[in-house]
Length: 425
Image 1 (cartoon, rainbow, N blue to C red):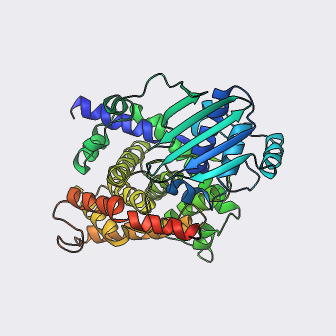
Image 2 (cartoon, one colour):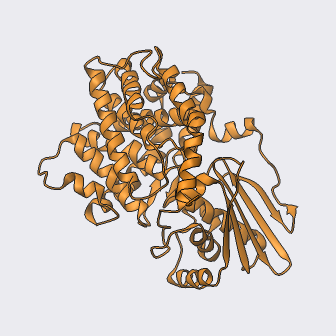
Image 3 (cartoon, rainbow, N blue to C red):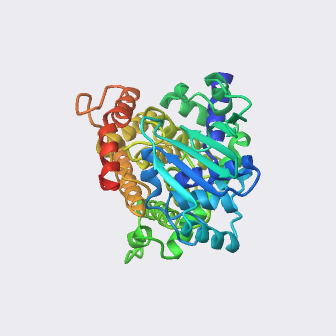
């Protein structure tokens, strides 16, 4: 494999598979708020948060981790100001104490934080402004959850350098270079030592929160209910139950960290945990599991590059599809089955609606995985949806591109209407 392409794909994996504590949208708000307080240099007297509609949608229904069960933009921002450590980035709330939680409740009661919807900006857009006396500080995040694009103190820019797209690609990888063919080539060629640390962390963290969700009641308990009354669940059912249980826990305040994919903890769980469950069932070698996870993670990222970070298109569809492709690799299925798995999955549940982060995400994970595993089985039986049937094309890359366009462009009006309904407009 060409060395530049190898390094690009490795960079994508390392930049995507990072640790996050709780749902990434409230965590991004907390990170911006903690960074703003750090920039201000003292405890602010007031805080204002401006958010895009997709941020509002994904924060309304989810419990902020280490908050004591609280929800909301103001909770995330205030907790970030009071107890957040910006050096931990998406694990910003890891060190929150009982004293911090008590102080947050006092500030919320006093109206410390104001929240405002801002339109005509990136789908992922956050600005946190803090003030103490005559001094102010501002932090802006756009496009990805820790991508700071503006920092100001007393109206003066403190951001030394805004990277060019080329510099960003060097740091995070160029996703436009991904294809099904070269993902599979990379998975076969990658030096395991180059990916072992990041993938081991993904396995350990994501399996741990799934076990937590199965052992204790969180939210709607989708994962536990899937296994209820089934003394000998199939490997497919176990895969769905484990992944759903991780989301049950994560969406309902469990403070355990998750390794994300495409900016999402739910997607990180969905794309990895089923592959691990199948590997355990098959007695697969460690190396085979890690190579399968490379396929799963990069296939999910490949789909999401066409859709964007946040939209009305539920991201667990891309993640479940990626997981099924990783399972195909684990089971030594040929590329034709992997391509069929992608086509069959997204042609069935592509466009499942995202109406925010909340308990029902766990059920959507189960549904998406069930469809992806069916899509895989259809591929094994040489059955694939055909070109001209809906958005399906002859080439799997064109099919991926079509569904990405639908999610990015076609579902904008859907996204807007979902937000209006949620806000009571």
